[in-house]
Structures are given as structure tokens and as C-alpha cells.
Length: 392
Image (cartoon, rainbow, N blue to C red; front, side):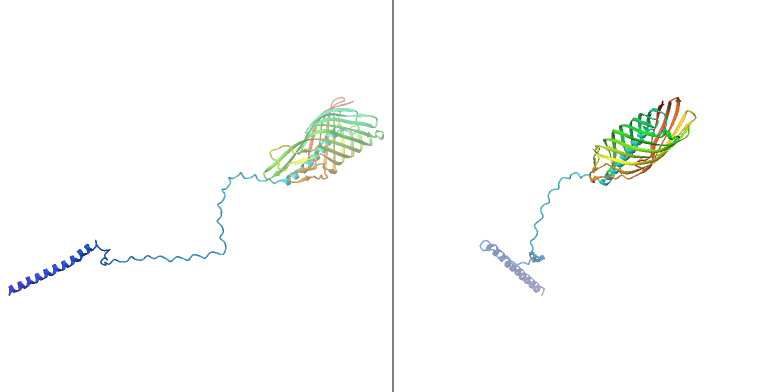
């Protein structure tokens, strides 16, 4: 029984072996046929094998192009031109034309002061610090404050008529102007009613002449870039005539008093000029030749007293009022055109005094002073000096 089972097992194994060999033979044959056909036929259709298809990538649909605008599109801007090399910025334009024009008024004030100062210096030559009636004399003098040197005196022509005269060489300055090389001459006639006794009237008529002088005037004004001061030179001349009526009284052999009223007419001729050269003067000026003038009235008095036998003193003073004043300035000023300043009327006080020391008979050393007190343009001034007076 066991033997039978073994035979069946062997028989089943043989059958299985045969079946496996047959399967292998069948599998090898198509492979050989494929190799042989590849050299004789077209590309064989391969045995389909599974290959997964690639995953499709998402591509967005193209956006629609915009419809053309009905208006023409602007042409492209041209390339900008190359920037020029920077140039230096211009200097700022200064302002100050009004101040420059107003400075012409300052010139008018200077010239008015010049007329008054010239007159004050001239009156010294006419014996303003001396008594009304005295003996013939001559005096040499010099003064400071305004430099002046000269001679003056008086000469009795008749018992009633006397000549007063003098000449001096002066330099003076005040308030922005300066006068040099100015010769002053003056003379007057005095009529004294001596036959009326110790209380009597007297009259003077006279003139003061300065025919030529060098003058420098300074004009100052402000601009936005700084102040400007310009000094210019020119020539000038001064003339004055006057009349005086007064009353004097001999109080004693040592005292004499007098009161008077004077009327003056003054002229001043100034040659034309232009501003002097300075580094910065944007609003320059040209001044035409012109004549200044003014009229004056003076009411004053004086007192002369002899102390002992050797000292003599005199004081004098008076109020002066100007009227009908006129400036001869006609200026052409850059930025303003033609400027003609006006000159108003003004009042001031004039004073004077003298101390005389009799060093010996007929020889007297004098110390004197004269000046003004008042608002500008006359202002406060003083001119003092000394002299040697000889009586004969």
C-alpha cells in the first residue's frame, strides 16, 4: 500500500515537472521571434506596459489685450538735456533809495550851518565884542574851535562916523562839512550921534565877504547791505549885507549899554559836483551849481564894564530868527530822480564875550568867545580865541 502511494507521488512529480518545462518553452519562443522580426520588419508595436501620464500643469488663459484708445498716445518724452554747469548766484539788489534821497536834506542843513558860521566869524571883524563908541584901535587875533587868524580895527572918520573893518583866514567844520582856505573880509560904517549926549542912537551898514573857499560835504545814508558815507569836494563863496539900528547909553565913565535890531541877507554860492569815489555807493548823486539864501532878524544887546583900571569886560547876545530861507540844491539821485530839499525857518540864540587885560597904556590882551545855542542845523557852537589890541 505504501508502495502504491510512492508510485503515485513519483508520477505526480513527473507530471508537474513536464508542465513546468512546457511553460518555459512557450515563454522563450515569442522572445526569439521578436528578436528575429526586429531586423526584418518595421518598429514592432511594443507590448503595452503601464506608464502613468504626466500630471498636467495649469496655464492661465491669456488675458485679453485692451482695446486701443481713441486718442493718440503721447509721444515719449525726450531725454532731458544735460543740466548746465552751475553759475555763481547774482548779488542781492540793495535797497535804500529813500534814505539816499533823504540824505540830500542833510546836505541842505550843512550848507545852512555854513552860512551862519561864516557870519558869526565875520562879526568878530566888525567889533561884535567891543563897545559901541571907543577910540581908534587895531587888533591882531587868532581863534580856535574854528581856526581863524587875522586883524581888525576901527578908525574914526569924523566925530560921528567910524569905519570898522577886518580880514581873516579861516578853517571851520560842523555837522558833516568842512571849510578850508576861506579868506573873510568885512567892513561897515557906523554913524553915532555923539552930539546927542550920553544917551543916543547909532546906525550901522556893512558887509561880510568870503569870495572863495574850499568845501567838503559828507552825505550819509543806509542800505540793506550796510551804511554808505560819501565825502565830496567843491568850491563855495559867501556874501552878507546887513543894517543895524540901536540905542546906546553911557551909564558912567566905566559902563556902556546898548540895544539894537539887525536885519541880514545872506547868500552862499556852491559849485556843482558829483559824489566822491567810494567802494560802495549804489544810489549816487549829482549836485548842480546853486545859491542858498536866507534872511535874518536879530534883536540883542551888550554891556561893557571897566573893572579897576586894568580889566575890561564885555558880554553880548541876542535872539536870531531866519525867514525866507531857500536851499539852492538841485540833486539828481539814482533811484529817486531830481530831489530839491526845502529849508524851513529857524530861531536860535547868539552869544559873545570878551575879557581885556591892559598890560600897559594902549596895549590890551583880549580873550574872547562867540557861539550859537539852538536846534540843528545851527546847533550849539563855540569859537574862542585871543588877540592883542592896540589903542591910539
